[in-house]
Amino acid sequence: MFNDHRWELRDYPLLFEARKASERGITRHSLLHTPRYPVVVPGIRMDRETFVRFRTPIWADHSWQRDALRFRAALMKHPSIVAGHALAARLYGWPLPTNLMTDQLHVCTAEPNARIIQPLITLHRSKNFSQRMWFDLPILDAVDVFIGVGPDLLLHDLVKLGDAAIGNWHGRPQADLKELQTQVTERSFLRRRAHLLAAIDLMRPTVDSPAETDLRLWAIAVGLPEPVVHPQIHCPSLNWIVEPDLGYPDKKLALEYEGDHHRASKRQWTRDIERDEALRNEDWTVLKVTSRTNYRQLEAKIRLHLGL
Image (tube, rainbow, N blue to C red; front, side, top):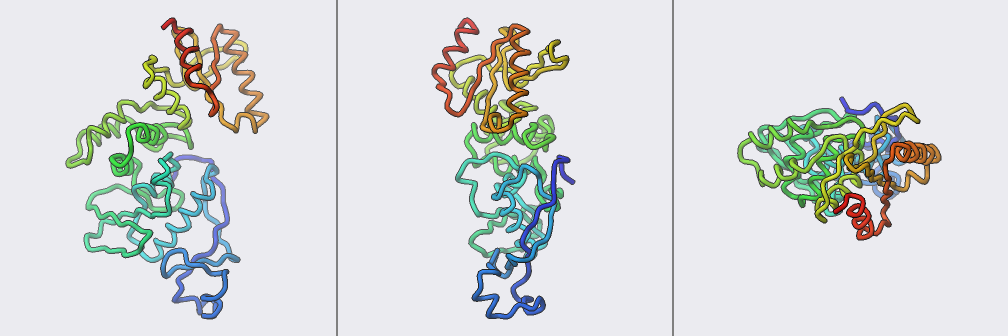
C-alpha cells in the first residue's frame, strides 16, 4: 500500500458535506457565521474541533497534510478521481519548483464525460493510467506521474524529481529506473519524450536527497568528472562499509553535503565525525558542502585534488 514502514497516525479535522450539517447537529447560523466550520472545497467543510486519525508518513510536513486533507475533501465530492500531476508528486514527497508548490489540486479520472468546475481543481481525463493506494489515498502510479509532470519541468528540476522517485530520500524507491526508461521509450504520443529521456540519462539510483542531486549536477555543469553516488568504502576502524554522498574513488575524494539536521541532531553529528575519521584513516579526503559553501572555491579544491 505504501513504500515505507515509517509512518504514524496523525490528527486531521473531520470533513463533512455542508448540506448534511444539520444531521451532525450543526445549525445553519453556526455553519455560516462561526470559524469552526471553514470551507475546504465547495460543498465540503471541516470541523476544527473534531478530529479523525489517518496514516501519515513521518517526513510529512504541514503542507503535505494540507494537500491530503483537501484531496480527501475533493474525493467526497468526486469519488472517481485520483491524485495526479503536481499533486501526486507532492504527495509522493518529491521536490518540485516553487511554481508547482501551490494550492492547485491536479486530479485524474478515466470517465470521459467527467467535469469539475472549481477554481482550485484541475481535472485531467485519460483512458489509460495506473493507480495505487498511497497512505489510503488513490494516486497515479509513480511512472505515470513522472511522465505527466516531467514535460513541465526544466531538465535540472526533472532530474531532482526523478532521483527522488528512484532513490532513498523518503524510504524505499517508488519507481524503478529501468521500468521508467522502458515506459518512456515505448509509450505512444508522449509529450517531450526526448526531454524525459535526457533526464532519465542523468538520474542515479540510491540518491538520498535533492541536495545530493544539485551537487552532482553542479559538478557536471562546471566541467568536472561526474562523481559516483555513494561509493562504498570498507573502513576497518568501524568494521562496516561507509558510503559518502558523492565521491571520486580513484582519487579517494569524498563530497559530503550537510544540511541543518546534521547540526541539530547530536546523534547525526557524532556519526558524521566517526565516518569522517574512518575515511581519513583510509587516506580519503573529505570535503564538506553546505548551503553557504563558496562553489568557486569548492571547484578549485576538487580540481586540485583530481589533478585537473
